[in-house]
Image (tube, rainbow, N blue to C red; front, side, top):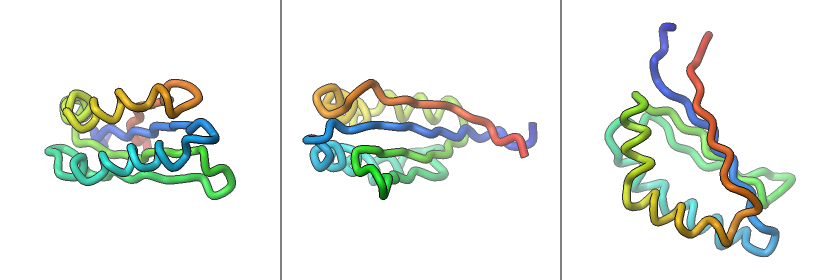
Length: 99
Protein backbone atom coordinates (compact mmCIF):
# COMPACT_ATOMS: atom_id res chain seq x y z
CA UNK A 1 0.00 0.00 0.00
CA UNK A 2 1.59 3.26 -1.11
CA UNK A 3 -0.78 5.76 0.48
CA UNK A 4 -1.06 5.43 4.25
CA UNK A 5 -3.43 8.36 4.80
CA UNK A 6 -6.91 7.65 6.12
CA UNK A 7 -9.93 8.73 4.11
CA UNK A 8 -13.28 9.20 5.79
CA UNK A 9 -16.74 9.41 4.29
CA UNK A 10 -19.26 10.34 6.99
CA UNK A 11 -22.91 10.40 6.01
CA UNK A 12 -25.50 12.22 8.16
CA UNK A 13 -29.24 12.51 7.45
CA UNK A 14 -31.20 15.34 9.08
CA UNK A 15 -34.75 15.06 10.25
CA UNK A 16 -36.80 16.96 7.64
CA UNK A 17 -37.68 19.78 10.04
CA UNK A 18 -34.10 20.04 11.41
CA UNK A 19 -32.05 20.60 8.23
CA UNK A 20 -30.94 24.14 9.04
CA UNK A 21 -30.19 23.28 12.68
CA UNK A 22 -28.07 20.31 11.66
CA UNK A 23 -26.29 22.33 8.98
CA UNK A 24 -25.38 24.96 11.58
CA UNK A 25 -23.95 22.33 13.96
CA UNK A 26 -21.90 20.71 11.17
CA UNK A 27 -20.59 24.03 9.87
CA UNK A 28 -19.41 24.99 13.38
CA UNK A 29 -16.84 22.18 13.48
CA UNK A 30 -15.23 22.83 10.09
CA UNK A 31 -12.79 25.64 10.93
CA UNK A 32 -11.56 24.21 14.26
CA UNK A 33 -11.09 20.84 12.57
CA UNK A 34 -9.14 22.35 9.68
CA UNK A 35 -6.70 23.75 12.28
CA UNK A 36 -5.99 20.33 13.79
CA UNK A 37 -2.67 18.55 13.36
CA UNK A 38 -2.98 15.74 10.84
CA UNK A 39 -5.92 16.99 8.81
CA UNK A 40 -5.28 17.08 5.05
CA UNK A 41 -8.82 17.63 3.79
CA UNK A 42 -12.12 18.28 5.57
CA UNK A 43 -15.13 19.14 3.41
CA UNK A 44 -18.86 19.18 4.07
CA UNK A 45 -21.24 18.43 1.19
CA UNK A 46 -25.01 18.79 1.00
CA UNK A 47 -26.99 16.78 -1.54
CA UNK A 48 -28.58 19.05 -4.16
CA UNK A 49 -31.54 16.71 -4.64
CA UNK A 50 -32.11 15.92 -0.96
CA UNK A 51 -31.21 18.76 1.44
CA UNK A 52 -31.48 16.42 4.46
CA UNK A 53 -28.42 14.51 3.19
CA UNK A 54 -24.98 15.71 4.38
CA UNK A 55 -21.61 14.07 3.76
CA UNK A 56 -18.17 14.84 5.15
CA UNK A 57 -15.22 13.91 2.94
CA UNK A 58 -12.02 13.84 4.96
CA UNK A 59 -8.37 12.88 4.70
CA UNK A 60 -6.10 12.41 7.71
CA UNK A 61 -2.39 11.66 8.00
CA UNK A 62 -3.00 8.76 10.41
CA UNK A 63 -5.47 6.91 12.58
CA UNK A 64 -3.97 8.73 15.56
CA UNK A 65 -4.76 12.14 14.04
CA UNK A 66 -8.30 11.05 13.27
CA UNK A 67 -8.80 9.63 16.76
CA UNK A 68 -7.53 12.89 18.28
CA UNK A 69 -10.12 14.74 16.16
CA UNK A 70 -12.91 12.41 17.29
CA UNK A 71 -11.98 13.12 20.93
CA UNK A 72 -11.67 16.90 20.45
CA UNK A 73 -13.98 19.20 22.43
CA UNK A 74 -15.53 20.77 19.30
CA UNK A 75 -16.30 17.36 17.77
CA UNK A 76 -17.68 15.98 21.03
CA UNK A 77 -19.89 19.06 21.49
CA UNK A 78 -21.31 18.65 17.98
CA UNK A 79 -21.83 14.91 18.43
CA UNK A 80 -23.82 15.56 21.61
CA UNK A 81 -26.25 17.73 19.63
CA UNK A 82 -26.85 15.25 16.81
CA UNK A 83 -29.32 12.84 18.41
CA UNK A 84 -32.27 15.24 18.20
CA UNK A 85 -31.36 16.40 14.68
CA UNK A 86 -30.75 13.19 12.70
CA UNK A 87 -32.79 10.21 11.53
CA UNK A 88 -30.15 7.64 12.53
CA UNK A 89 -26.60 7.59 13.87
CA UNK A 90 -24.03 8.95 11.38
CA UNK A 91 -22.55 6.38 8.99
CA UNK A 92 -18.78 6.90 9.30
CA UNK A 93 -16.50 4.77 7.13
CA UNK A 94 -12.67 4.64 7.03
CA UNK A 95 -10.86 3.97 3.77
CA UNK A 96 -7.35 3.57 2.34
CA UNK A 97 -6.68 4.56 -1.27
CA UNK A 98 -5.73 1.50 -3.30
CA UNK A 99 -4.96 3.10 -6.64
